[in-house]
Length: 152
Image (cartoon, rainbow, N blue to C red; front, side, top):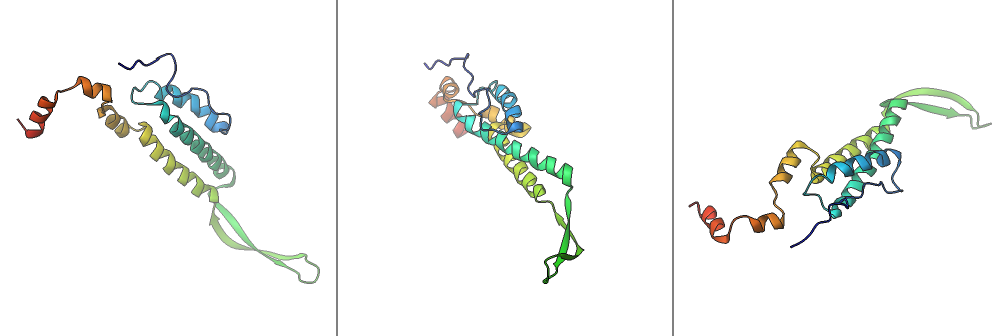
């Protein structure tokens, strides 16, 4: 029989030092939440780190959008070939702030990692239906399983 030490969390609750500010803030909250789930393993620590690192990028991009807006103005600058001074600076339109794409990519990655960790209602319900190897051993016998399989 395998004994599990419940005093040691499956996922460490202290954030790695290399995480950015936002990731360090999220990490212990997420780790404490996940440690309550019996399906989470120590190996899932890497996913938690990825999630928090991606969250950090998301928040930095979000802050940039708040400061600089979704669109940025584009100007065409004309420089004098004689002395290198700016002759004119003409408005040429708008372009999407690159932070928007970073934010969008980060959200996609967070959603994918979040599903792996059971952070959505659907993922949680699917995760709860999985049985650990110990639970399967305690379950039905081969004879009972065959009866279910054969529809008896």
